[in-house]
Length: 65
Figure 1 (cartoon, rainbow, N blue to C red):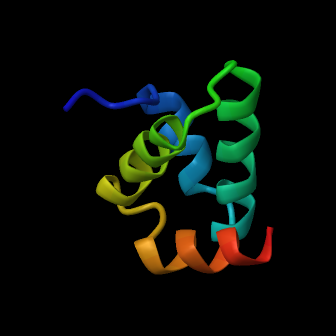
Figure 2 (spheres, rainbow, N blue to C red; figure 1 turned 90 degrees about the horizontal axis):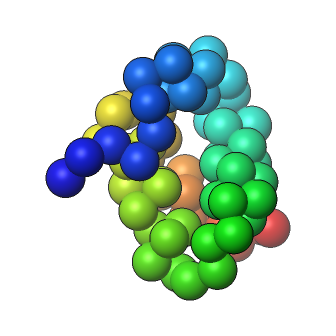
C-alpha cells in the first residue's frame, strides 16, 4: 500500500509528541475533505506502519477527542 503522506510530512509528524501528531493528522484528513472512517483509518494506519504512533495511542487519543 502506498503511503498516504509524503516523506517530509511523515518526518514532521515524527518530530511531534504522539498526541500532537494525532491531532494534526485529524486536522489534515478533515481539511482534505475526507469524511469516512476509512479515510481516517488509512491515515492512522500509515502513521502506525511508519512507527510514529501505535494503535493503542490512536485508540486512546480517539477516546478522549
